[in-house]
Length: 433
Ligand code: HSE
Image (cartoon, rainbow, N blue to C red; front, side):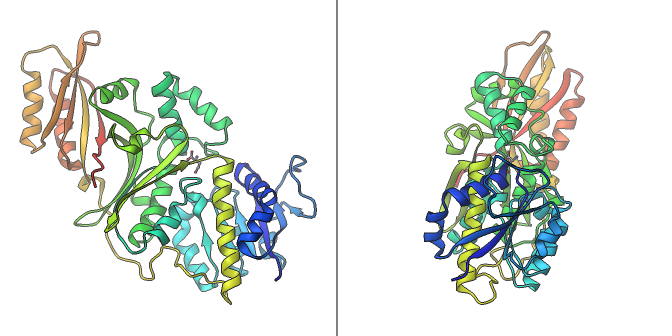
């Protein structure tokens, strides 16, 4: 059988990792695919004497590589939207199979790229775009395909989890930990994507589309990052038996789908509350299987390359088994996409942690609880903390309530004369099955 010929576009952390993995595990991989994988091109601007590029053509003209006859599969690991979009489209139009780690590209332009791929009978594989080494795309597309997915909740940004863990466990400063995450190759080229939740929102967009069979709708994801989480809130949450994690949540609700990314209090006895460092985890609740949890490294060369090469292996198998290489599983795991509305953030339902700084005045606690009760918000726990200078922190955990009701309550609490500083609020999920 003829070898399958590969072009790797981009030799950054992921591209170099995939190249090395294909070389180091070549014999094992060939046993799995039944045929040789030959790297014919790498797309790179810089010479890479540190890599073994013997017999591999090198070019900085990525569009030209995407058109070459001796390329069957294009691996796009350059990241960013441009020129990745143009290169992937060119590859598709020239009948190349595509493997990409580019969550930003797919979250924003996936609908049109998948449509073009269908029209040209090729696949776009993107296991490495979500949760690094965890095969979560395969889980949703294949392993759980008999189920109705009710919700999923995941720690899907390794950098953010690494920062939160180091801050909590070692009391390290935010900027210092972020720098280390960048040095370790975890962070995005623009690290605000990690810190402000954008990277997690890209990934949640991809997961939700596969879980619910809906088009990609990145612009409808409610997105909040970790930059406002303080050591004070981490400590109070722990006193109440919770950990703060940055979660991406997709939930099927009565009127539509909730898509949200934000710091979240999770009961400390949930396994996912104990996922630390650069590790990722995704908890999927589905019927009839119940809850299943997937755990592994979410970023870095090895884990991401593992997912890239697994996609290459799947494509090589498909090329061997099908005439046109169109693949056996649809991109979104559904043949027909559903028209389910994405709920606005106002309609989302979740519990809340509130931290209110108040002056030491009689009756202020009663006023706060009255506001909550008038809005129909149940209080699960209330705790007065040690005085901070002249203010008393009050921490409240609430039952689930719509965001709109909570917005009204927080506005009224904020307006009380005895309340000082901004009321801090962090969403809370019990993650019960
Ligand atoms: N910056 C990403 C993260 C890389 O930290 O999760 C993996 O997608």
